[in-house]
Amino acid sequence: MTDRRNTLHEAVDRLSESSLDILLPAIAQIATEKNSVKTAFLLRSIDALNRIAQTSATAEVLAANSDYSMLLKILSTPEALSTLTATDPLASARLRGLVVKQQLLEAEGGCLSSTQVASLLGITRQAVDKRRRSGQLIGLPTGKNRFAFPAWQFITGETLPGLEVVLQHLQVRDPWMQAAFMLNGNLRLDGLSPLEALRQGKLEEVGRAAQTYGEQGAA
Image 1: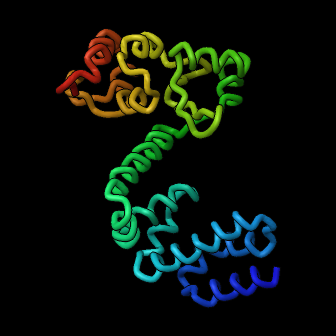
Image 2: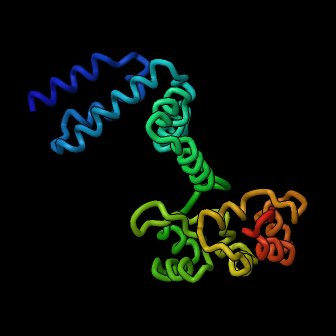
Image 3: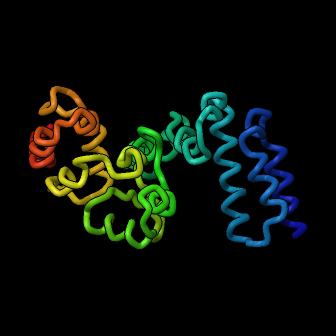
């Protein structure tokens, strides 16, 4: 315990004032942490974040609307990327993928849990999962057996009219790609996103766009 506290004190001494604003919650957790592996992880995180905070715009990072968004902003800074790409040339591409996923999770009102969806639709959680597995709902995987359901799929206590038909037309089954299709502008819909077009009742047009999504050169 003494060695860990000494290491913690040394880490804190190295922090700048701006770093402390970001790292105080982690420091408080380390002080009472009994898991040595977790302690080592948190201490290394402090060192990494402190190096970035010395040169980055911490005010912009702190403006993130969630802790995970803040971490993505931190890792996307030039200082972090230069370190990451030195050992992993694909680091930038991986981070871009994470940023896109975060944007999909937060778009159009964010996401609902399976419990919230069950309450909204008046069905059981098991029925919600059955709809997800059968391709009637988009459930974005967020952990082991955990899914986030984009809120834009629902309206006035039911699923968005036409959504199930469109999902059946889609050739891709990856939920992230399905969400991206629904939210991004589509040339076949005059620049509207399929979600916007579906809200306007353009089911046939969206269905045709869904059938060609994923083809080479398709919008």
